[in-house]
Image (cartoon, rainbow, N blue to C red; front, side):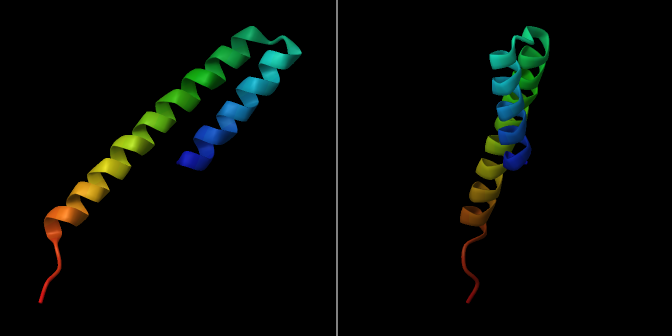
Length: 56
């Protein structure tokens, strides 16, 4: 998921440089959403792993 966020970020940067403002804004919005979903999932996995602990 982080890979897709980075891809959309690069697309947004290239579109912005070429002057496609609408496409750049859309791609940046998608990249932001994917990045925050990735962060939430990473935190949930870390908390789940910490709560699970080690079994004897």
